[in-house]
Image (cartoon, rainbow, N blue to C red; front, side, top):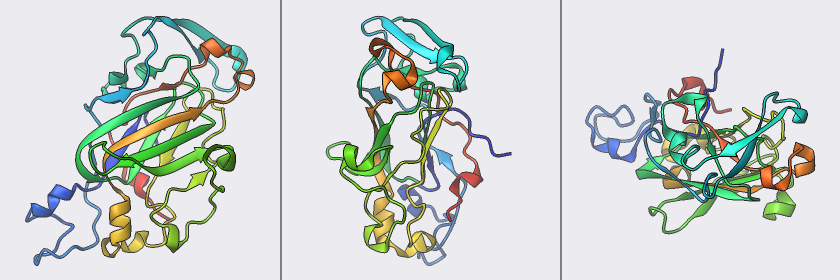
Length: 261
């Protein structure tokens, strides 16, 4: 059975630096690129994530839901300083630890990958309800500039001035799409947001011959922007209780995660 452990994950089927390896399965004996699917590596593990805010600075409250289907199961507690740090996003404790933001309408998480990599999968597993609107950005120059990678929103046009994408045409293979999937408030805990940069792109099956897609998936840094929560009335929370919470890094990527239709 396919299982998604908790986490914020970036799965990398290959690094650009592998091109110098004479045993690289992505190149033939003449150093020409060829189709391959080498073993996945997981670069985010152990890397520090920079958060725009963290609960406990100053001390405050955050609320979880003991029943992921019932807003009446709200359980609030005090967030002490250093108790829900962004370091928990890339540690090895699984779902036992979560980063929580301060109560706020928006927040960001930034992950430096440390080198140019080709990203095939980005995922977050939430301790809080999923946002109504969320954006993923990438940098190709170590954080000096950023471009949109993907938008998720229940209201794409209102929030991001984009239509809801149903089909990605060849002419927009290098553009960020906006979808309304994975934006429902329920489950109130444990919800997944996952993005496969090649999924639905017409040239994905001939990736090795597509400079456009190779450039599209290349990044040195990733940033996740939580842009809007569901209303506090929908969540059964007071404004000062509404925070974003994200759990741990997914430790062992599965080959099934890379299935591309």
